[in-house]
Length: 439
Image 1: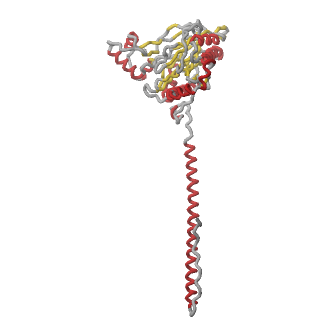
Image 2: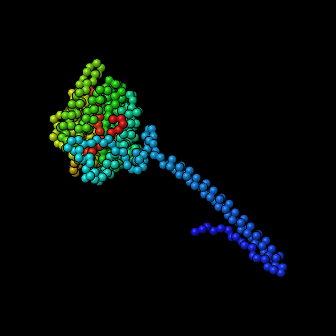
Image 3: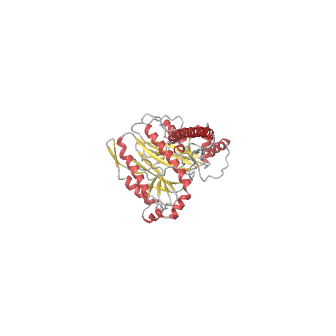
């Protein structure tokens, strides 16, 4: 369609007998009306131009506002010290996966199997939960590694670490939180030592400290550990257990026999030597310490991963979680229970046991509510307000409801290092959930 144009007025023919004057008057009148219409149309154009100009200005303002809003939507960065819950750093709700390792030999077909991919899709919520716990572990350990130094109280190290976990994981009862007490075993103490309340132990320059802590979301546990040593003299000892752990992870897989993993770990571990104060020691695998399978709310789910040859013939299976951990020692390579106990855990299979002591019943109710079958320590009981509980705790241990886990020690004067990662045997690949840039 053609667009409309302004009215064009044609002058009428002249009328005879004095009609000229009247026709002139009419013509002047028509011309004035035409000029008015033209003025009105020009005014309309100016108004339209002004309206268009204002629209352009409004649109540019909107664009500026959009740009500002885009800037606001940038992902928040973690603070130092860490204080922002990890869930806020990943607004999509998707957490980063760990290091992916492909299966070997007879399991190569799994990589491209559509059936196995479908099996993974159905497990995605569980994978995401445990990845969230792993991301918390990575951020917490990176921070703790940056602040730990000689002269610090062991209690302060543990409480700083644990409080950071609580913030970053958005602690929420048994749904999210700490999976077990922070192990900070020193020197010849290999595992299961954390300071009880009032302990004044101070970290020294020549100490070898194993920091072993766990996080969980909905009972899906990340169990991961590393060793801190300030004196470079201990570097080969740390390298031995770190490389042995990597070897264990590399060898692990669906249908792999646990004993084969142990043999591979021992071979790598015992290829290392360390010179301490002029004396050379061959690094030994601690033969009575193992890695282990992990289940929901169950840190030790039944299968053990040896770190020496000659272990079980049992095979790993699809869908299982494992803590692959190795301990290298300059001592005998054998641990025994010693020192004051700090770690406890309710037995996973503990049925109903009648208790006579009212205080023991009360303490058990507290344990069920706060820890269930997750491990805890005396400091955790102190923190939730329990007092004068040692007799009741002993009664629960004697009744078989709670299991004590005393520190595990090699010979006094020796040194032990430890590294550990949690892995998941997915249907299509192996995921090292807790792997980070640090180790």
